[in-house]
Length: 430
Image (tube, rainbow, N blue to C red; front, side, top):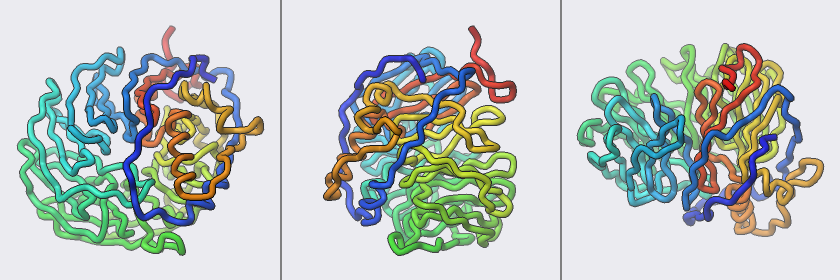
């Protein structure tokens, strides 16, 4: 376990949300931990750490020498990824709910007041804002906004809580087209060929023509007794002619990219929120309640392995080198799993998790949520996990042997992983 000292860094704050699904109350009581010890060869060194006054629910994004991250305090930071020094900051005047999109000149984020911001990469100067019809949140667990994605021409694409998918001009923020859907769209768009592929809370994964916003195909999820619409809260991955994504109806789906025709779907024990990772013909996901990581054969959907995890996972796995995946959780722990077997080979805990883990887990590693008699109790449980454990809700960024993450306790952290086997990534130098 990483030998650094735990500290508290920030006060947890939440906005009031609506439409709470009833199944979460029971599912929260089933959260189990799976204790593990780091392989002796793998160590984690915290390179730098930045603290803010508000939580981060988004993921950091690496671009060249810099890291971009925005938080609930409304500040977008450009950070030198090596030193951790701030290069510039931009104030959005409302919480930043999306990860940063970027191109060679600008950085783009969505804020919770329904604005899209175009920011100069070199100076941090705000260049323009685009106003949607307003943001909404589906429920308490709808934590993210759609990340703006730039093409290699003139256009930016994103979804919105106003039920639309947008394309706007990257240079000035002027509207090109918008396409109406049936519900909130908070997944990140994927650009594939001439298509914009994106899903929403109406349970549809859709493809739109990049040029004019015309719908090219739409696929409807199955749904279940709790989530009848088969809501899609997260983002898709396109690989080898297929579209992979998860749903709140507990399913992982694979579609044919050209037509949107279903290839297969596999049911899991809970929500699939994070973006699937597809590597060498295998799809890796993590699920929320009854938390676990899974590996499926990308062609057939056949399950290869499953590994229980300590607490809810909202973010998707990331590849580390040639043989590991990294899975962050709301317990502030990043587990490194063997891609072939699913075995937990090592883990890194946030400083908050190191200090406070015994307050949330018993000696056997079981999560101890305490008595939950209302949704207010349940919300407070998630608040405490994100704040006191430095929970990682939005995901991580990996470059070589370095992991970057942001926490619900308001911290941005860079960690170097050393002692990896050959093929696992670049080993840290002395």
